[in-house]
Image (cartoon, rainbow, N blue to C red):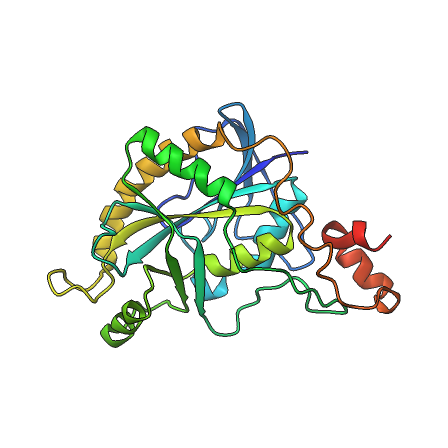
Length: 285
């Protein structure tokens, strides 16, 4: 096993300098190439695989991310627990720039993104009512408090298409629906992590108030970058503290697919059995 904990770095978190024994590894997947090479090493004595979601240098826009390859690559490396860092806009007054939030729900406003591995020959319906691992969320919350980051537990992350930010009408609509955060990436990761039977948590790092707040200017890239740099320091410290307390054993979702596959096993082709072996091979024997 190359790693047990995966860390996905979002905008502003492109590297993990505190990893020791660093080495890079590219991973082949049935869905093409992940965003970048995985950086493997140890953090606080735990085996970690780090991936820059948008690639180093931020080369890949949200709609073009190969979510399936990114998550499958972590699975192939042995990862059971995923900490996903993401820059977000706040839709609520009390969620301030530089605060961290651990959402427990997602709402999909994307269009046609691939969000399942099972698109050929196999149909699987996972349970997704609670998309975030409560065990990991507790670990992250405790770590935030220990390092002195202002943290909020719970809330709904609205995943929008992008790459443009919201119109004011959209932002106000999302607020009227009771959403708390807005971002462009994490819903697909969460769904695919559940299909891959891994635990997943979003560490949402607030950079702005989107464009709804009457006393704050509409979000700009310059403003976001300034907060990203400050959030990145906190993210590095948080990762170091959190991985110490990630459980050693299997994920609570290690059997998420056990009763999810609806396809008649006799109709699954040899090619599909090979394609999906890492994900469902144990259920097809």
